[in-house]
Length: 331
Image 1 (cartoon, helix red, strand yellow):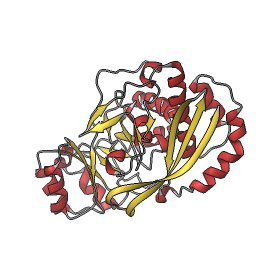
Image 2 (cartoon, helix red, strand yellow; image 1 turned 45 degrees about the vertical axis):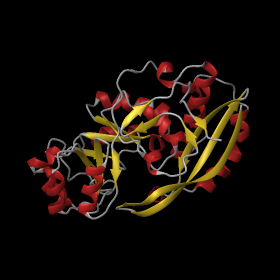
Image 3 (cartoon, one colour; image 1 turned 90 degrees about the vertical axis):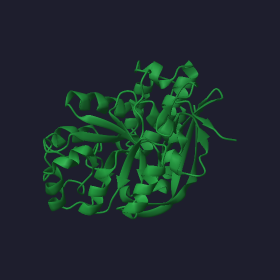
Image 4 (cartoon, rainbow, N blue to C red; image 1 turned 120 degrees about the vertical axis):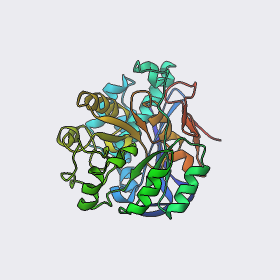
């Protein structure tokens, strides 16, 4: 097996605004695993508020490259055990795990869904994200869109704006990116009308969730509060839903385990994304038949996607007919 990697830059179609700040580009670490001229692909993204340093990932990759290249081709779950022994950051672990699933599936000429015996008849539609802006501009974007589900970013709670969103005949979720106060959360979870929002994501900063009540009107969804399997038990009294992102939890292998555990604990589950190319989005798409919500619009928001594979067409999940994760690089 051979390992290749490079840093690429993803360019947003327009400046994207969330409570954590504004950005118009993201750096991504692209990883290629190859064996007998068959190639599998993965990636991870530099996210400021996760304090990701891709240069440190490259140093780590150079240190472990020979160990990976000398490893035999085995079942992906066994390969993940090997990766976990290397003490990798979850973002880098995810890129390698996804690249190996893509490679292994291509070598076996089977896609991820076949390899894991997942349902393939119904895929949950994705939302598209509406970034922070004037409420009228956000509403106009929703009304002009061909998508059917929307996640509206907000910074703090503005009740008059929320009421305008509630009047729309649309499937809308809110994402505060930890910008709500305790008082905001109390008001939201005691307000019956808030049930109309499909979910309200990460209302408070990390570890400040104990003001939340799972059984209240708001469908609270944990994002940054839910990093991996270890988070699930603690969050039960506070959150009805969780957002699983491959980079947060370490890839497709732990994501499958996390989904199974979350089901046992009666969570609603979303598969989400960051700013990603079709390399990352193709990986997320393979889980969309076994979750309740999907937010995989990352590749739809960039202007220089360097790959193709599974994709989102106005919210509809379109699966590639190719093996592995279905990923191909554009020439």
